[in-house]
Length: 149
Image 1 (cartoon, rainbow, N blue to C red):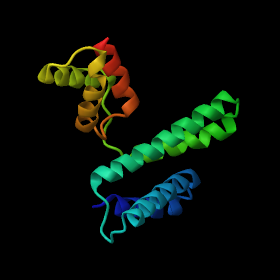
Image 2 (image 1 turned 135 degrees about the vertical axis):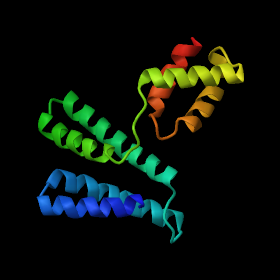
Image 3 (image 1 turned 180 degrees about the vertical axis):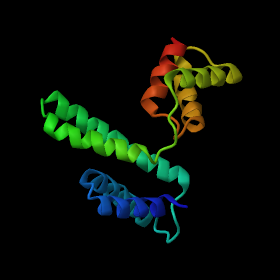
């Protein structure tokens, strides 16, 4: 079942349960999916890889907004963002822990014989492709810097 079909089912469930936070988050996902589909100009569904990237972007937006609201002392605005974040994260694949990312990056370094900060760009490119959807770029970057330093 595609992500858009799953989202539609969850929207119906949220409407029945009168869960406004979940409904708002799910509608944002549906909207982003429709926009991505029309941007590509194709009538077909977007790929699973693109769906994951889209969900990660929405999660990052919610995290950033919540951080800004918290920084400004606006807990009343941060709470709905965090609640929406939790709803959207349910549709992402299980995220890797930092130790798992560290092990994967160490393996990439040993396989390719890369070392030193000069190789950071190469390592980031390889690691980002290998770990796409399993963790965010910020975590990958932190681990790569740590291992190359």
